[in-house]
Every structure is written in C-alpha cells, then in structure tokens.
Image (tube, rainbow, N blue to C red; front, side):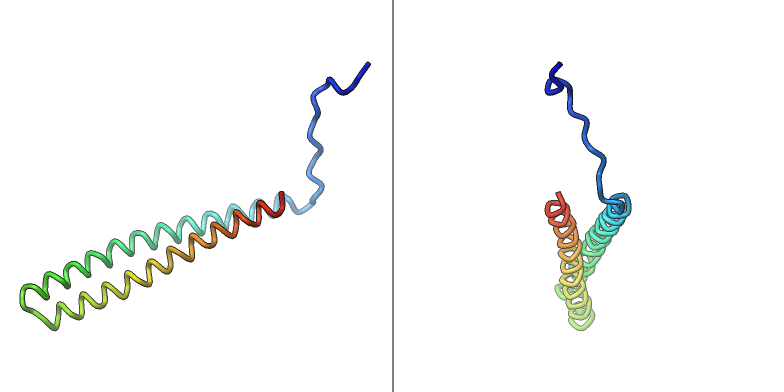
Length: 101
C-alpha cells in the first residue's frame, strides 16, 4: 500500500519556546493597538484645542488664542509621532513573523 495517498499530518513545532514567542508577540500587538488608539484619541482632543485656539484668535483674544492654537498644534504633532511609532512596532512584529516562517 502506498502511503503517499494518506493526508500528511503536520509535524509538531520543534522550537521549545514557541508558546513563549507567541505570547510575547500577542502582548506586543496588544500594546501597539492600545498605543495607536491612545494616539488617535489624543490627536482628536488636540485638534479640538487647536480649533478652539483658532476661534479665540478670530474673536480677538490674541494671546489666549495663540497659546491654545500653538499648544494644540504641537501636541497634535507629538501624538502623530506616537501613532507612527505604534504603527512601526506593528510592522516590526509582522517582519519578524515573516522571517521566522
């Protein structure tokens, strides 16, 4: 009888640390998701502050408007960098998985 017609059963993974690696990757993925969500919500809040500063500038309160608009814009830029870092972590996880497999 020819054994080639039988379905092939995959061999167990030989790496004894496989479960630990998966656990670490899942935790990194969870942290990256939370970081991205935090950056998104903070960017939205900073955009609202920037809009409020622009409204203050247009209404004639120059000093308060300038401070609010500048603070909101700088914070938005930092939050976008934070979101980019979270995305880079996800890309790193994906490339590590491709290299391992």
